[in-house]
Picture 1 (tube, rainbow, N blue to C red):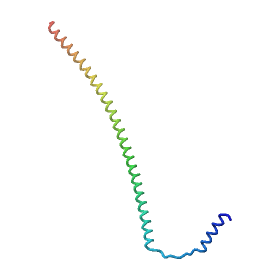
Picture 2 (picture 1 turned 90 degrees about the horizontal axis):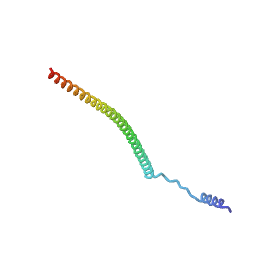
Picture 3 (picture 1 turned 180 degrees about the vertical axis):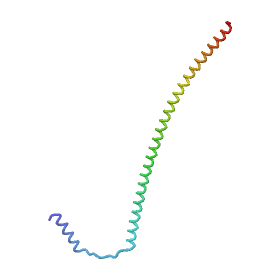
Picture 4 (picture 1 turned 45 degrees about the vertical axis):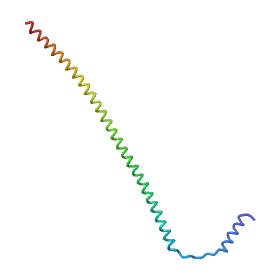
Length: 121
């Protein structure tokens, strides 16, 4: 006999011999099922809130990083402008120093010339 046929015969034999009895619903068991379901839902909600909170924290960290990057770029630009201004001021001070030296030499020359001119008279 093929194996499938033997299994089918045992299956139908079990169905013919089985007895089914109706049972009343156990209120304590029903309460336990509902409590378990509520607990499961609460755990899922708590896990979802944790994931959402982590995502919000990650988004806030990204926003903070973007703000910090923008601030760093602004400060770098400001530093570059101040460095260029300093170089220009140093160059201008050097030019003024050279002009002061030239004017000092001219004053000394004119003073020396004026002093020697009065002696000649």
